[in-house]
Length: 434
Ligand code: HOZ
Image 1 (tube, rainbow, N blue to C red):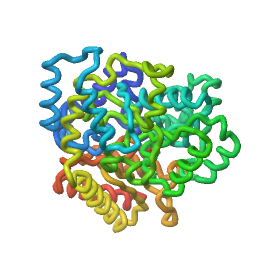
Image 2: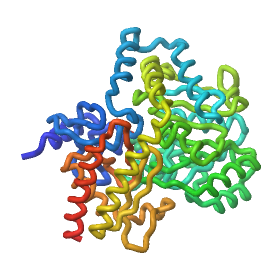
Image 3: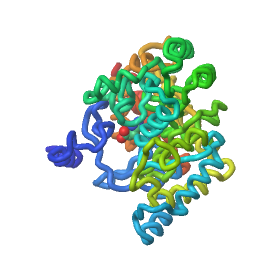
Image 4: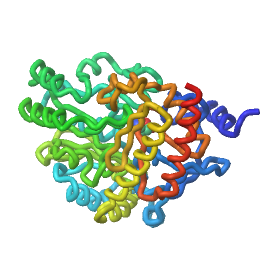
């Protein structure tokens, strides 16, 4: 007899490829059947049989205030009462743009999009238009959404299906994408030495969150900034995951680096479909209608998303908000790490602000992975066992060893203790089995 989720998955597969509308939902990496969720509140998410899970995915990051935050929901309800979309300017877009430009010093102007993919795709076009150059540089294991030029040696769901470069990307497009090892300053210098005056931009996840989590060195970031400035290339930070997540000023605040352009994602609309890219005025003024780089969208800056974002930013800008979320991450990750150490499980962990990464390494000599090759050398079977053990115990982690964990301000000490207890039980089983 199949479970409810198996039945739902079968039904979904009839008319939806793979039964999902985004590959990372399909459990391709971890195996088994995805859980069909139907509601969420605070730190919890509920399946169609009302089984409760403590959620560390948070819709892939934006639910930093927890699910269905009353203030955000009220803002969305009020916005819906006023109409869903106008295709005209609204004052709400101006408010969100002002808020982001006030918070993030590198962002002097900003353009809203409907998703993070659109933001990175548009930022690349803008960088090419601004510099008049074609080549772009990205890093192995970094994922910047699913536009053609960026689906080369990418992370996230691409790794689960074992196709880091997507089929369907014309070789003529891919040839303009140079891919370098992440967190390797010398590779960046060598690349600029070779192609310096042909490079339009370097796009980077300033903290990688699509090959599990890697906080790169300060030297890596200093080198990127220095080489882009010297080479006349645009430095693009893809802060779709890290923006307003690892801290109010994102990864750029953490490293003290001013990128030329920054891409944001769903978090700026509190989880509604939205993205944005912004940065130096001189570059942003190249976008239509001011300049000749075309970029558009009926739903860009949608009023529901903007009003949700405005409500959310009120809480994010309260003093101590990010320290509170980071303390929860520290409590959780240190707790999980301590119990792994006690059971002799070779777990490595990393954390910053509201994000964390857990790696199952193969031996006691291996340290926290620092690049794509080191991530892929981890023990994926152990991660999968851990993932399913946690899921059975009502803990919802991202269904892939290449994804990160996200904390919300609504996770309680009780939630965190329950998670650590579940991890201890799973580790005990793993220790006995391996
Ligand atoms: N790729 C993101 C997670 N690493 C967003 C989730 C998705 O692709 O559906």
